[in-house]
Image (tube, rainbow, N blue to C red; front, side):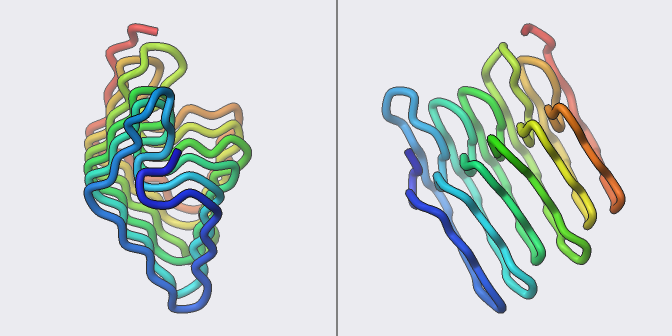
Length: 163
């Protein structure tokens, strides 16, 4: 699991994480760029691009994804759930945080989301999803609960609805 990183990452004040052209291609491999919890603190950034996984989480797969800084994900694809992210417990963007997902795909026909898959999604900051699609359930976010007190901006989301 984890094309470039296997383990939890915490980017604190002024930290930076940059991963490009990574893949998790083993049998049932998850997290094209990384696998584990991902925390992006205030004034920190994460840039994940051209990531691919055989299974869940095209860019990242973990239990918790929490952003107070900025995370940008471009061109990520999963063979399972979460074209960009799979967070098995929580996907959270705090006030002042920003997540931008551009061009994400989920290839699974069962329970997949083009951008984000998580049972609980809390959006207190700004989230932009653009050009996201899924062969399965939903182009944007697949969740049991989505709590939005910030801004959710979605453009060009689609699903084939084969699930």
